[in-house]
Image (cartoon, rainbow, N blue to C red):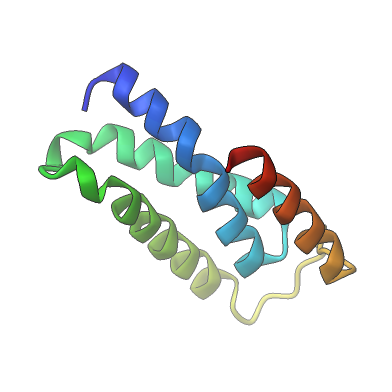
Length: 102
């Protein structure tokens, strides 16, 4: 995957991965951190991806694994966070994003 192909892939899929993580974490900062890390890992290991048609599922797997690792590390710890107070806030934001993208 060339740099320009990766940029197009990133632009097209960042929102999808981010909102999936936001739904899991309920924390915008954590979702952004994990999403950025997932795309960084994908960039660094892009040579390992033989079939670029599977890139979206590959980066989603990376994000899912990072989320699981983060959850295991935090399990049992009490942490103050920027949680979404009203689930409708997330739903409205996701709808708006999807309308812009598609």
